[in-house]
Image (tube, rainbow, N blue to C red; front, side):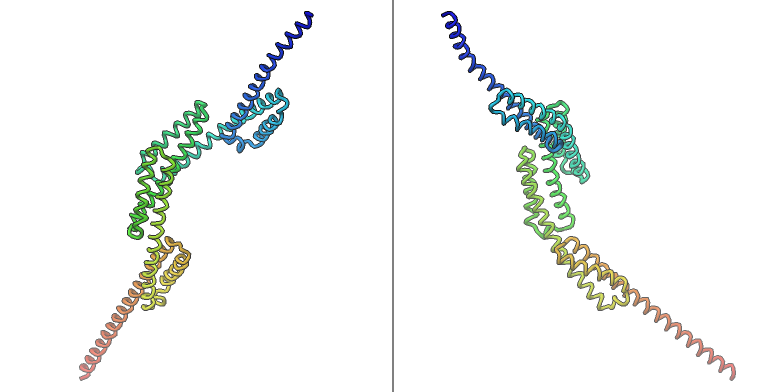
Length: 337
């Protein structure tokens, strides 16, 4: 009777204890899965799969295997923890490489922008991007890796926006310096408006808007410059052809053949470039050809002036010689008399 009572109490206690054990086991499994997922994401965020593909595949294999152990909770917990450890080791290897790659990328684009002269016009924006980059480096040194990764991404985004915006600004300057603003005033004006909008958005922290407007500004200025070069090329093709015809009328292909051949070669090459819509190169060659045709014409004129002067000089000498001979003859006759 006593044994039955004790056994009954044991069974009743075990019945209460078993759900508690199962709950703890389930919680342990959930924790192991969460840890594996977290370390896996961290390894992927820092591109461990790219830097160490073999190690990544091994950790992935452990992770996948753990997921197949649904009927064996204890082994599943152990497998997930092992996978988490593997991903954690992988992160430790990948993070220094990832951080160095972002630093190199940021310093490369920053150095390029400084070479272009961004400090002259965009110093305020450059300093802002620099501060973000310094924050990322500081966070990496403090082993605050996830915020550091985010800061580095933002810094790189800022430098990329500045590159686009400053390239747009440089094209604007080229258009103005070459006197091209009248060729496509609409795109030139649109470029100015969107460039201002881009930098205003940058100041407000709207990097997506800043990037979009900077790209639109660059596109508008590129279109304005392209239109200007096309018109410029067409204009100088006419001027070069005019000088070519004038040179042919003067027979410079004969009198100044060397210069004419150079000019004619450039002229034909420029026509090919114009047909291929390579307007900038075409315009520059047309200008060269135009100048060489003029040089050929000037050279021809100089040769003709030189020849005319030589003929006049020769005639004068002949006349002087004839006068001397006549005078000598007269003197001889006078002497005979």
